[in-house]
Length: 491
Ligand code: AHR
Image (cartoon, rainbow, N blue to C red):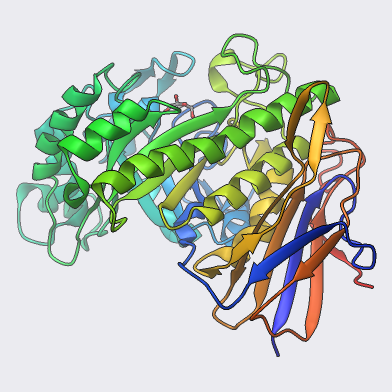
């Protein structure tokens, strides 16, 4: 039996099918491409309490663990079918020397994490530990190599250590460290933010560096690499142009794009994660919707050099970036997560689904205890944020066929500014079930919808909703399930 599933993300309940105002046409006969599951990826950096205290804990934390990996966090990530996890950074990646993080833990050198709080990093979580984490979650590792302060040789040897099964000094070392089989890591980032913390390079200089590094990141037996170039900061279209022109689609599986939603729009005082009025909320959502323009314009440049769309646009850092929670280390980027964050996640994932012909990978920053987290931890306790429940609701779109949508959104206006109140994406999975995800950004108005579904045969309809009384509502360790996805009783 064919089914339709609606997922709603809204503060004002949506959809009264009897009094139609907005007509949405979703075409089931004309599906164009698949939505890659890798759009639903996550990012975990050696930053604040993401790795240490988030994934990797000591004896004093009384939770189930494998080695020192928290299994409550692993279970939560398995449930939403996390497809890939990016590591070790971020800015940290371009100061990370992988050999410091292998071998007996007590003999690993300490380093200062100069990017994030100046704290000591004991390197107890390194290559083997990260790959064990990925295997427990059941996701693909996505490793960012060090271009900024590393060498070609260092990166080449890391790939050999990870992926070769031929006899060599590197593979002997891996075996001596307890891993006989190569891991066959696929997703490989050649640097991070090379225009900034990854080396302050110009676009043309980086394009040459990319080519040089990429040559020596070899494809070992049964382990072809999917190489990802460090791409543009937000609207730096020249960066994408330079990479596409000077490197070309044949040499890059992907090109990255980084864009963060900052409530105030300024890197100084960004705005609180939990205390904001409707005007600030509106501006935040306006800033979030910039992703639509960024993805469209970067894709247009890529189309010029790569009309066959061989190279993916990889949005491997996105999400809301607010001021840190009062009283926490400013270098740790710990922020709470409200209904507003859920609306940002739903809207951004709709944008990615709708551009999935080019956007084939993305990574929310960052999984645990940093920026727009899906999990927060406090000692033995763990909570799932409103953003987590969006990923839970949207997981149905992974590897499903994207459906084309036609509608005119009602406006959401404050003062003289307007944004579309409604955004939508839809897909059909391999069982034939259709999934429609709708986000209503207007906290003051219900939207009444009529759906027209040519080419879609359906018999039953079900729905889920994420909502709450206030945009500032959050899940806390005292009240962890205030916001979650709930089943809608369909009339
Ligand atoms: O996600 C936090 C930081 O933001 C990353 O380390 C860096 O790549 C970006 O500037």
